[in-house]
Length: 257
Image (tube, rainbow, N blue to C red; front, side, top):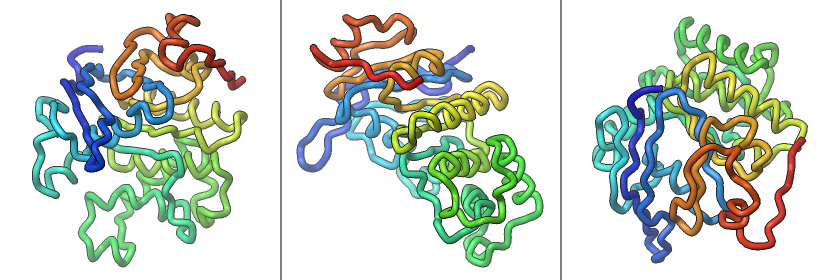
């Protein structure tokens, strides 16, 4: 790991209703890390990820990605260019139910395809080969030609990972990627995210609830509480005292085996 691929400096996000979701958050992300963000619901985890790829506009602060402050990008084309390089997967998959698995993965190529071509599904053979390659990477290539709504939740999340990979991102944001899944499926999805991180060298920033998963998959962890960064370091160093500081006194840890 070398120079940070991402530098967050004094990031503040205040919503129009006055809620301050982020209160001066600062940290670095090294290239190739699997960084996990933890904290209670409402601590600012999702807001943080959405500010990084400009789904939300930060109120102030810096988001320096490869030397460019993404917080200052103004035009739609600039933000679109940023999102080519910072992919994102969501808790609820965001697939098009009636489209095939392959068709959903090819949606990740839209940033590189002209509007009229995308409207008529005129993707190149190279695009399709890329989509199938990433479906194979996440172990679901045999489902390429069936409808997305015929898949289980875990399978749909793997399709969403493949879709994000077709953008050729340098960083992949994962916002509670296993929160909608049963415990047995959580590890399957997390294993594929780790494979993406280790085999493709893609930096991952992932929001998670369960510390048992964090200890297995994270190379480093940061914790948010009330919009402020309260912990940064090795997940194995989060003892009971730190757990209560992050989640509150009397909080009980839930394990996913």
